[in-house]
Amino acid sequence: MTRAGSRTLHQLVYASRIRIPWPDQAREVDQIVRASIENNRRADVTGLLLVHDGWFVQALEGPAEAVLSAYGRIRDDARHEDCRVLHAGPGESRSFEDWNMCARHMTPADEAILDTLHMRGAFEPHKLTGKQALRLLKAVRGVQHSTQLRALG
Image (cartoon, rainbow, N blue to C red; front, side, top):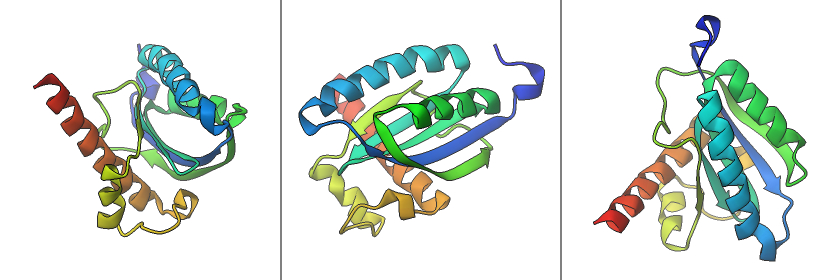
């Protein structure tokens, strides 16, 4: 339950380099997501994790204390390096309310998102503005929703 002083929605988007050897990435990301779902559900945090080209890009949203605590754990996690906050501050509404945590690996088919957002070439999310990073993650959210609907249909 959220305390009265912590009800304001806080959003944080960061990028970090992945420090997981390639053969272990899928298994490790799966472990990250499973642990995050449990932790985030208790803390009222939602978000989306994008895995692409050696990078994590993630949005976290919820009570400020919970979001900052989650980011602190991420920043200290040996599977991340060069963590950079791209956006942090109050939010009007949740953008990733459907997931306590969702991870998506970009596939060649998804790379059309990067074309649309003019991010082709070297993927360098640490150079994105907060607005660009949120736009990228919201586009990925749309693809994830479509994928889930097709799986159910």
